[in-house]
Image 1: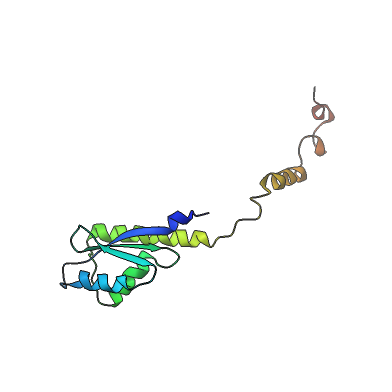
Image 2: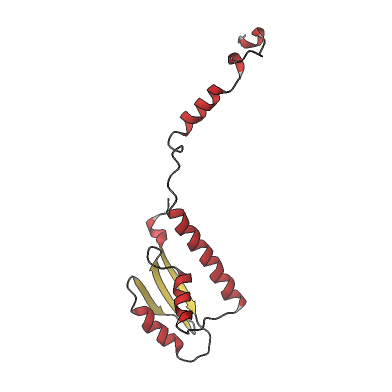
Length: 135
Protein backbone atom coordinates (compact mmCIF):
# COMPACT_ATOMS: atom_id res chain seq x y z
CA UNK A 1 0.00 0.00 0.00
CA UNK A 2 1.32 3.42 -0.91
CA UNK A 3 1.57 6.05 1.81
CA UNK A 4 -0.52 9.12 0.85
CA UNK A 5 2.50 11.36 1.45
CA UNK A 6 4.34 9.44 -1.29
CA UNK A 7 1.71 10.60 -3.75
CA UNK A 8 2.94 14.19 -3.56
CA UNK A 9 5.83 14.85 -5.96
CA UNK A 10 8.15 17.78 -6.47
CA UNK A 11 10.07 17.73 -9.75
CA UNK A 12 12.25 20.02 -11.82
CA UNK A 13 11.37 20.94 -15.38
CA UNK A 14 14.58 21.90 -17.18
CA UNK A 15 14.11 23.80 -20.44
CA UNK A 16 16.53 24.26 -23.33
CA UNK A 17 18.15 27.67 -23.86
CA UNK A 18 16.20 28.26 -27.07
CA UNK A 19 13.62 29.57 -27.77
CA UNK A 20 14.12 32.47 -25.38
CA UNK A 21 11.35 33.33 -22.92
CA UNK A 22 9.84 29.86 -22.82
CA UNK A 23 10.43 29.43 -19.07
CA UNK A 24 8.28 32.48 -18.26
CA UNK A 25 5.54 31.32 -20.66
CA UNK A 26 5.63 27.80 -19.21
CA UNK A 27 5.37 29.24 -15.71
CA UNK A 28 2.21 31.15 -16.67
CA UNK A 29 0.73 28.05 -18.29
CA UNK A 30 1.49 25.67 -15.39
CA UNK A 31 0.43 28.21 -12.77
CA UNK A 32 -3.07 28.07 -14.23
CA UNK A 33 -3.44 24.32 -13.66
CA UNK A 34 -5.59 23.13 -10.78
CA UNK A 35 -3.82 21.01 -8.14
CA UNK A 36 -0.38 21.93 -9.51
CA UNK A 37 2.03 24.36 -7.88
CA UNK A 38 4.88 25.89 -9.82
CA UNK A 39 7.75 28.13 -8.79
CA UNK A 40 10.99 29.42 -10.29
CA UNK A 41 14.18 27.63 -9.35
CA UNK A 42 17.57 29.10 -8.53
CA UNK A 43 18.90 27.14 -11.51
CA UNK A 44 18.77 28.68 -14.97
CA UNK A 45 15.93 27.59 -17.29
CA UNK A 46 14.32 25.52 -14.52
CA UNK A 47 10.89 25.44 -12.94
CA UNK A 48 9.93 23.38 -9.90
CA UNK A 49 6.48 21.78 -10.04
CA UNK A 50 4.64 20.14 -7.16
CA UNK A 51 1.73 17.83 -7.86
CA UNK A 52 -0.05 14.73 -6.68
CA UNK A 53 0.05 11.51 -8.68
CA UNK A 54 -3.72 11.47 -8.37
CA UNK A 55 -3.82 14.37 -10.82
CA UNK A 56 -0.58 14.55 -12.82
CA UNK A 57 2.60 12.74 -13.78
CA UNK A 58 5.86 14.28 -14.88
CA UNK A 59 5.55 12.50 -18.21
CA UNK A 60 2.08 13.95 -18.75
CA UNK A 61 3.16 17.47 -17.86
CA UNK A 62 6.23 17.32 -20.09
CA UNK A 63 4.31 15.78 -22.98
CA UNK A 64 1.69 18.55 -22.74
CA UNK A 65 4.43 21.19 -22.72
CA UNK A 66 6.12 19.61 -25.75
CA UNK A 67 2.81 19.59 -27.63
CA UNK A 68 2.53 23.32 -26.95
CA UNK A 69 5.97 23.89 -28.49
CA UNK A 70 8.14 24.08 -25.38
CA UNK A 71 11.60 22.53 -25.67
CA UNK A 72 13.05 20.63 -22.71
CA UNK A 73 16.74 20.16 -22.06
CA UNK A 74 17.68 16.95 -23.88
CA UNK A 75 21.16 16.36 -22.50
CA UNK A 76 21.86 12.74 -21.65
CA UNK A 77 21.64 13.29 -17.89
CA UNK A 78 18.22 14.96 -18.10
CA UNK A 79 16.84 12.35 -20.51
CA UNK A 80 17.91 9.49 -18.23
CA UNK A 81 16.58 11.25 -15.14
CA UNK A 82 13.22 11.82 -16.81
CA UNK A 83 12.96 8.19 -17.93
CA UNK A 84 13.67 6.92 -14.41
CA UNK A 85 11.04 9.27 -12.96
CA UNK A 86 8.52 8.23 -15.64
CA UNK A 87 9.10 4.57 -14.78
CA UNK A 88 8.85 5.12 -11.02
CA UNK A 89 5.65 7.14 -11.26
CA UNK A 90 4.11 4.65 -13.67
CA UNK A 91 4.96 1.81 -11.28
CA UNK A 92 3.47 3.68 -8.32
CA UNK A 93 0.27 4.32 -10.27
CA UNK A 94 0.11 0.67 -11.31
CA UNK A 95 0.63 -0.47 -7.71
CA UNK A 96 -2.21 1.71 -6.47
CA UNK A 97 -4.64 -0.24 -8.68
CA UNK A 98 -3.56 -3.70 -7.52
CA UNK A 99 -6.03 -5.17 -5.02
CA UNK A 100 -4.79 -7.17 -2.04
CA UNK A 101 -4.47 -10.83 -2.87
CA UNK A 102 -7.13 -12.75 -0.89
CA UNK A 103 -4.63 -15.31 0.42
CA UNK A 104 -2.51 -12.78 2.26
CA UNK A 105 -4.91 -12.55 5.20
CA UNK A 106 -5.23 -16.33 5.53
CA UNK A 107 -1.72 -17.28 4.50
CA UNK A 108 -1.00 -19.62 7.43
CA UNK A 109 -4.36 -21.36 7.11
CA UNK A 110 -3.88 -21.95 3.39
CA UNK A 111 -0.42 -23.46 3.83
CA UNK A 112 -1.66 -25.72 6.66
CA UNK A 113 -4.43 -27.01 4.39
CA UNK A 114 -1.99 -27.57 1.54
CA UNK A 115 0.35 -29.45 3.89
CA UNK A 116 -2.48 -31.71 5.08
CA UNK A 117 -3.26 -32.75 1.51
CA UNK A 118 0.29 -33.88 0.73
CA UNK A 119 1.56 -37.32 1.65
CA UNK A 120 3.98 -37.17 4.55
CA UNK A 121 4.89 -38.82 7.80
CA UNK A 122 2.06 -40.94 9.26
CA UNK A 123 -0.48 -40.04 6.59
CA UNK A 124 0.97 -41.99 3.70
CA UNK A 125 1.05 -45.70 3.02
CA UNK A 126 4.66 -45.78 1.86
CA UNK A 127 6.28 -44.97 5.23
CA UNK A 128 7.06 -48.16 7.22
CA UNK A 129 5.21 -48.48 10.56
CA UNK A 130 8.44 -48.34 12.62
CA UNK A 131 9.21 -44.89 11.20
CA UNK A 132 5.72 -43.59 11.92
CA UNK A 133 6.07 -43.85 15.68
CA UNK A 134 8.13 -41.30 17.50
CA UNK A 135 10.66 -42.90 19.87
